[in-house]
Image (cartoon, rainbow, N blue to C red):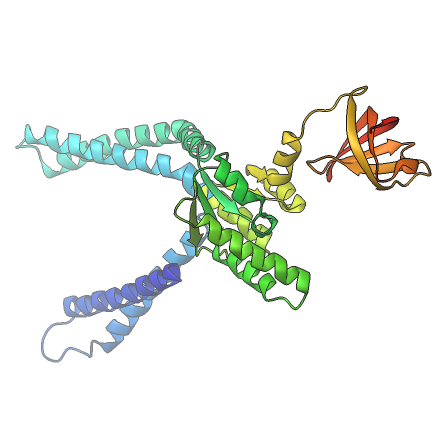
Length: 345
């Protein structure tokens, strides 16, 4: 909105300035009391000024961020070259006070031409290196950034509170206003389960804002209007702030990684913290339900890992000793396949 207002003010100012120049041209071209009305000159000047202003605005619309980053070093170098050449020529002419005006013009034009060419050459040659340096600085800033954008799924999950209390996550957690509104919408849902999840998410967020919390919670108002989906908005904001995305959403995880954004997935962290299990290792598990196959029983470890026991169906409700045969890692988590060894007393 501010950019549009600046454009309107600029075009209007050009129109007024054009009208002023039109009045000045009328005064220069007419003399005496019988001079014609200045109104046509004012209108013509205003139209010319407004046209020039519109042309400048339209020209700037074609200058993208990529073009600006490539041309900016060259333009700066050209400007410095021309100014240096002009200043050197004027300094040299101080020592030649009797030089004719034509000779002074030749000296100035020559120095401006030489140093202007040097500026063009150096700007175009080293502009790419300058751009690479700026990109490296931006990447370094992003890599050391402690800003993290929080997705709705992480807040509803609830484990983020315990992780923050443990000190493994530090810095500032940024919660966009549209994420907060989505959380509020879930809390107001007519579905009982969704409403309970939304309210728990609001409680978790409030808990993270307490004074004893080891992280800072910042509610940001930035909302990319050009995209509608919450995931796309988070990706845009992460690119803008150089922040990481804290999420449990599988699709957002993949999209953010494609865009080159660092993703902190709570599920990946939970899987990484599960103890390693090797084939032929013995363990104890309580069989609580039947498996898919005829003789299989299923139990769970304390961390929620599913253990499939071959030959364990007949020992439902009992604590048994099993031997690991294989481990399967899936997107949903880890599954341990075992064979029955013995019933524990």
